[in-house]
Length: 342
Ligand SMILES: Cc1cc2nc3c(=O)[nH]c(=O)nc-3n(C[C@H](O)[C@H](O)[C@H](O)COP(=O)(O)O)c2cc1C
Image 1 (tube, rainbow, N blue to C red):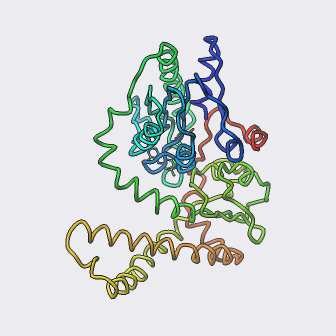
Image 2 (tube, rainbow, N blue to C red):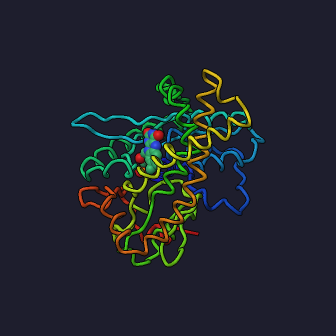
Image 3 (cartoon, rainbow, N blue to C red):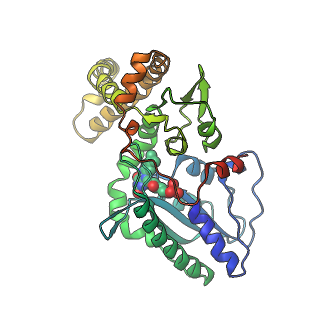
């Protein structure tokens, strides 16, 4: 969001009209006529993929009728260790949207990854404010250079620099797209500190949260962007590490061998040696996970009404502890986000 705004600011201050559009606003509306426009797609990288919401948007985006130029900008997980800025990894985040847009007849002018602070706070605490500020000012300078090049009609494909790594992680990208994001969606819960302020519901970009039995419940629409966790003023939203690990064990140790045996009764495909068999095994594991995590999450949600279970969840969630910082991108206010919603 910030990166897109910066580009628009740079263009406007050079006298070229530019605007940003949040993609959830296009859900039920017509696409504007963008003849003679330079189009930019700015989106976060999730699990070495474009965020699914963005991928769907690009997929539905109209075919090019004119020689329309586009640029792609994916934000990634940047960190700073001492004075070194460590970049994130795009995986398919640039390649996939670029391919779709090329097929649709667009001309790709610029492909830029941008290493904003990592916000993947299910797996690490949010970065310190000082580090966030430093990463932000570096990114602002990168965007400034990018805007100048775009204004001068230059082409640049910075995204290709990490192509060998991106291709190497592409199998994980595919796995994450189908399993990872659904798995992560089913690890969020709200503790008893939730005061039903609705901020998580109002600000969810994919409208994945609703109340079930007066408690927030995450549906499979969730893309695990973790905005809810970051914005909750009560710090009531957690990732349930203590529930996820035993659940994963139950699925792989108990359900998977059973499913494997059953599938083999029908076909010996998975008994074969080699790549096909590994692929088959991963597929069965993924299906076992998807099938079982749904009822398990329902049961956990209702059991959370019990004090003891709620406590178990709370104390076994790393995100519950004070040292596990939340991440807020500079300049982003909850009330501002609330007003922005359609
Ligand atoms: C669920 C999830 C998955 C992520 N996967 C990746 C990834 O594969 N590669 C990467 O570089 N960053 C990854 N990130 C980090 C974000 O892409 C990055 O922090 C974000 O784009 C920063 O932009 P923002 O501050 O505008 O949200 C991930 C973040 C989340 C929440």
